[in-house]
Image (cartoon, rainbow, N blue to C red):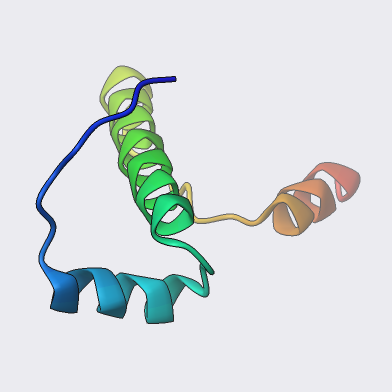
Length: 68
């Protein structure tokens, strides 16, 4: 893990803390980075496989599997 110093807009950081429910700046920044990677991975999957509705929760996916 690396220690990095960055300048972040205070208002944007406060909005992100409120929106995410994160308790620390570190937590909200990590969540934002994870979300960025998740979205890029979904986009890469969509490009690879074609168009799919990937907005399923794990519970919805399990229900669809059970219906088969």
